[in-house]
Image (cartoon, rainbow, N blue to C red; front, side, top):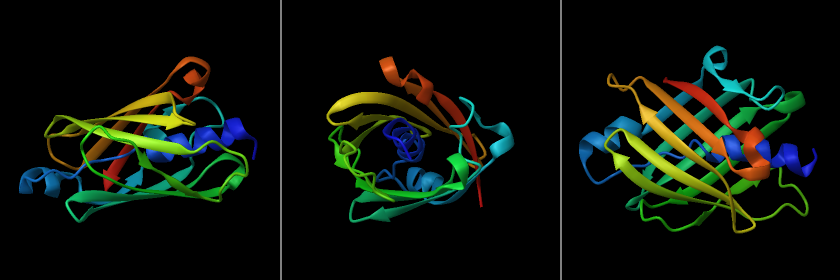
Length: 163
């Protein structure tokens, strides 16, 4: 997989970063298993995953997120990140790792109890931002990613349903 496609797959996975806050309501709202609705997902041709599952759990005062997806050409990918809502960058690990690919990090900030914003960096450069919004009934999660500059093709809207 070339570096551009690798970054596209990886950015879709990490753009879905969700947060668990101290309040039980916020924690209950985002923790769980989420499954991609491919029919409702909009992305550049060839860049949207065909299937994806996201798991969010509370971890030692922060959150752990794991995303597994089948994307471009049937390639299976997985990304993981443990983070806190403090605006700091946290390392994202991915499998399969792309040799020579820049290090990817993600930071998270709270917008409201049902909206979180993340910044995704590759090699220290911001390549995308993501706005993650939970529906009022707590059953649908919409992740809107905006690619920046040469990464504009990473822009997408992905819809997940609680499983």
